[in-house]
Length: 94
Image (cartoon, rainbow, N blue to C red):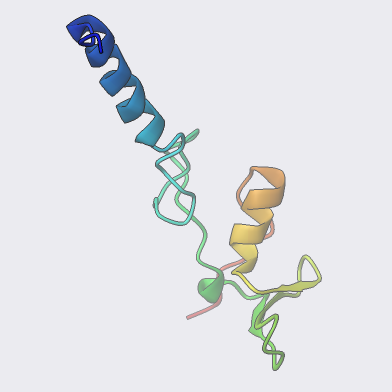
C-alpha cells in the first residue's frame, strides 16, 4: 500500500478539526449580552413585573405581558422566536 502524502494528511487533519469545532459556540443562554448588540444586557425575567410562576410542571414560567406560559424563561423564548430582547420588560419596584 502506498504511503499517504504529508500534505494530504495535513489537510485532512485540518478539515477534521474544523468540522469538530461548533458552528455557533456562543449560545444565547450562556452570554450576558447579545452578540449583535453588545450594549444591551440580557433580560432577567425574575426582575420583571409581568413574570409569574405557574403551578403546571410542563410550563412553570409565565409572562402576563405576552400572555404565554413556557418551559423556559419567557425572555429566552422571546429572543429565540424574534431575535430581539423583550420589549415589554418592566422592572419590579423594589
